[in-house]
Image 1 (cartoon, rainbow, N blue to C red):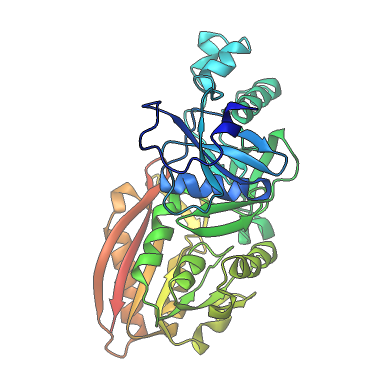
Image 2: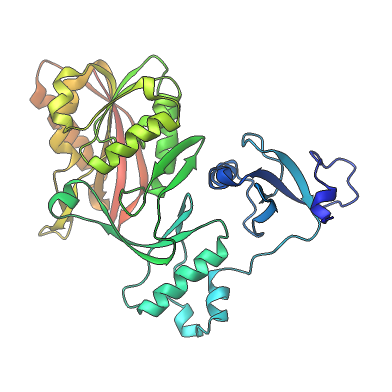
Length: 379
């Protein structure tokens, strides 16, 4: 009998002979990815230990304390857990990387479900990039694939659809996965549709701001980034998405999260639908495609969200709230986004008033450029 088997029924640690037991939770194998993502969201997943098979149908996932929200079969104590090695640099050093090589090792990466997304330096050889991918797979025992993040396409249909540019560094070529944040499940393939981990806080915030009785117009819905958390709290969401792959995931994710009855999804240009929508809240989570720099050295963009402001205002009922996203050079904060909002309201006429409710930095977009959002009420 394994030591874990002897502790199979443990569900708490009071009176345990070991003052600092190593805890794990048992889940069904098909649920392991979703459970790990949920445990990470709760902040109780233990990255210092490896996932273990518990029996032919279940796995033991390491945790620092019993989870409060994630559904598990049991909480167990591990007597002799499998430790992970110190980190990415240590793993690469074991592969023969020199101190000079290690100076350029990526310091961060994103875990999207079972897929790791990492940016590797352009000067890396194919062998070095593969080493990084394999080392990351070893470091994250639950991951199955590592993709190099090479940005978002800007040209042609791929630019219109905001398709990610990636390449496989290690692991499975099947990169479809389920990523969980704050209880919302996103089915996606990071090699085919974009997903920004840096927007996690904003996705959660939208779920907190919306009221159950609101009608929301999500103009650039993607796979349901903002639509899903808002629908999960009871809002009715009209969601438009032009990318056919993202639209398919949007429909699937509405069913995955049991909100299909509250999401009216359209594969269309949001401008074609705006005039027919009476929304209490409009979300404009898009800021165009990079298009070089201007004479002042600021990044220029095409088809920015401000090009869609007149349509957003047409869809917004008096007293409704608009969430306007923009990629803004630091030197133009907050002048440019506020000026664009004010100008759009003035062009609409009709004496509509603008009230700024909040201004937030979502994340760093690129060197000297911030992804920001402005919340505004338009009477």
